[in-house]
Image (cartoon, rainbow, N blue to C red; front, side, top):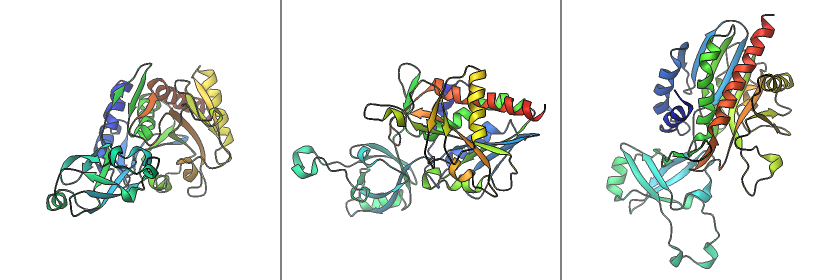
Length: 338
């Protein structure tokens, strides 16, 4: 499957943290040709194949969203955040309510004519936000049980220069890069465990449990990181279209980082360095201290407008990450079998 089509398929399915069931069956179908696929108690999707030196590859499948907490007397839904929702993006946004039926909704917003001057620059608290689904209280309560999840409306858009825009590219772009690598990885004399982890946006919960009992020799987490846009510090962001971002951090294993850089150089794979002074804010932080400790590296895809309904990535960067994973695994397989 072409990268464009794979990404479009992956982002079409909701998976707000804690309710990833809708995407699990799709992922099982994709992974099943490569090895035994299982899910664990927190809905991690795990596939292991091959023999030899054992590498775990992780990307998270969950996304940010909202949870319905109550229904007002006039039928509006009150909500709480499920993950790091950008409050600036809420007012006037189109959303999808995943209740007993799939419903369209609008996050209510006060017309500027009715706003006080002091309110014009205020960012609303999520507790003050209401979702309008066009129903009265009785109908809303019947169709939308408390705890139902809400996501930004799916709007997959093809931009110029191989860029695409959608919500939840964090981290379906990372999931895509792993899937694209599977055919090549399957041919190598190594063992691979693919961990498509859950609840990263709720505190890296899936990655805390996923590696247990796997006896892996090392791990690589794949996520997204900040792509440069006006207002960003260039020293703290990557560039869209300039390739995979190889993480360098005190919590990451230096030999893996060096190996990724060498693999990129040897295979003419576009890459850039992402230097961090401590925790990475990704699953790598918890995988590295799982069990008695796992040597862990991090590769990221530069992404613009993170945690918004219009996240943007370059398809070429996704493919660069996939190519780098394969090149690194080949290098590792050669060293272990030398």
